[in-house]
Length: 316
Image 1: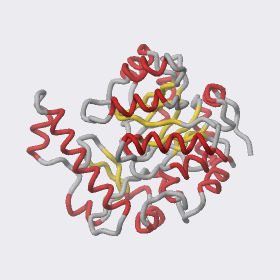
Image 2: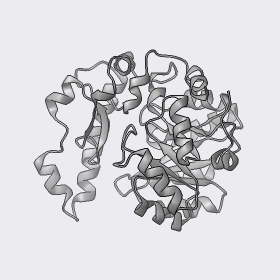
Image 3: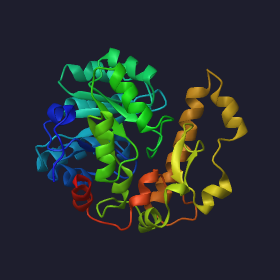
Image 4: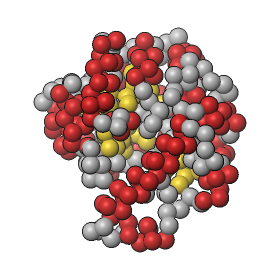
């Protein structure tokens, strides 16, 4: 088992250039520790914790059990009212890196620079990549069209070379990786690392329901669709009968309100809150309202296994 050393392994001091991606409602301390023990790193969405106290306690718990680097994912746009206190905790606890999503990372980068905390920014195109590089980001998370969750529009084959040829900071590929073969393909494109999520939802450590895990085995890549009903932004989900019944587009009224500059922030907050609650109920309990987030790499999920086994297979 070996992977080449890259800018990501050098930057974080990890053995293999893989981040177990932060997944809403899924990532937890147990999964992070399994990742760290296996030579990769991992991140948890701050929003996985209901209170700031719980977020702080989780960071302290992981640090007490491992000295290896891990990160926290922050939603940095104005529709997340908990962003500022979450950032404060991450800086005070001196996490190793922060992954920013869905907003302007300027404040995060400024506060983290002073503490030596690395900031990796989700990007889907060159325009935004250049902006965050100019702000001082340490690496780009290149979210391609095969990513689970909020996917981009460009394929990895388009996005990685585009960013590598026009930016000077490391490019971490996100989306479409579930096998060593895919890792090698993206290394050949110039990727400096990988953010891998979907295949870890089917790990024994993941806290989601057995129904969710079995769906990952039962469905395939052809069953993944994008919906704007859950967060206002396109989100990839499994096309269950419930999703087919309710559709994948935001309502006409929501679409009109989302175009209103004054109301957009509040409508997004409302849509996101309602969507989060729906996803949470489906992920953690048995319900007919099955809205399960996943990417097309579910094609490679055939059983529920310990995270360590999944990582071992990734390394080849």
